[in-house]
Image 1: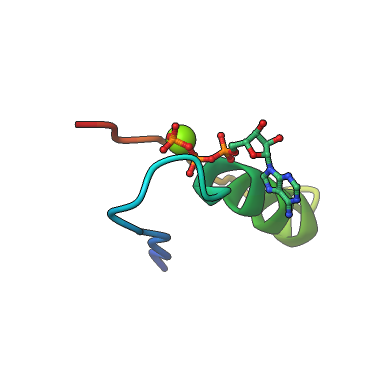
Image 2: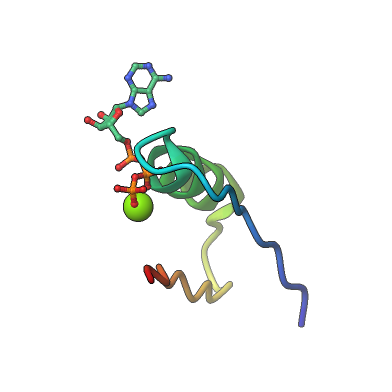
Length: 40
Ligand SMILES: Nc1ncnc2c1ncn2[C@@H]1O[C@H](COP(=O)(O)OP(=O)(O)OP(=O)(O)O)[C@@H](O)[C@H]1O
Ligand SMILES: [Mg+2]
């Protein structure tokens, strides 16, 4: 299992926007991706 983390202590800088774009680019048939967002 590969894990990629996008983190930045500043709010509203596009963490989720970037993450969703990368997940869409990596998505392939037969491959499962778990995306989760952790906010303080
Ligand atoms: N490259 C970009 N250019 C312009 N606007 C952007 C870009 N990336 C993200 N945004 C906009 O900035 C806002 C914040 O983006 P996003 O929610 O992805 O950031 P975040 O770092 O996850 O925020 P938070 O700290 O609140 O969780 C959204 O309105 C999003 O549409
Ligand atoms: Mg966010």
